[in-house]
Image (cartoon, rainbow, N blue to C red; front, side):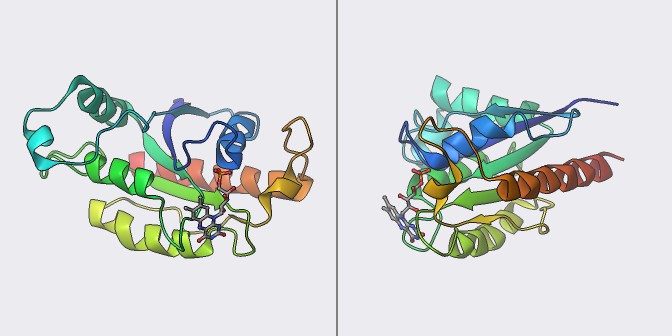
Length: 184
Ligand SMILES: Cc1cc2nc3c(=O)[nH]c(=O)nc-3n(C[C@H](O)[C@H](O)[C@H](O)COP(=O)(O)O)c2cc1C
């Protein structure tokens, strides 16, 4: 069975990010057929069509990393009821050049954790609005909303919420099925 190379964009830049911790924990939760690799977004400039026409090495590397992927995963908090600006900026970069965008048509999935009660539900609704613009076949179920995220980890930063681990295992199994279906 072909190994699936899933590249990950994380929507929080802080080093102690819970969403980053969920990415770290995910390596042990994904099926054997999936590998997860982060594509850094913190080096990207603010999107500017003039830079796009004469792209910097950072932008070229970003496009190449997406082009190499079999699918894209977004793990992100909700900021002000929506997608964090740094992640939207990365999605805007990924969407260009129009006509040969590296992300266009790639299978995609997203989930997220927040400190609040909604568990990124409103952010996820906005992802469902934005990503179809890139013609991405999306994993729509199961949905994973993670509220009060600090409670899911112990003091050493280990994911200790077994119910959440189970949800993520199901999420990744369904994502693998979606990716393989798209390739068949
Ligand atoms: C600018 C900003 C906006 C935020 N807006 C929301 C929000 O709309 N909904 C929510 O549940 N949490 C919101 N939060 C709280 C985040 O969910 C919380 O800080 C979370 O831990 C961020 O994810 P991270 O740990 O991966 O950095 C916001 C935080 C920041 C810094």
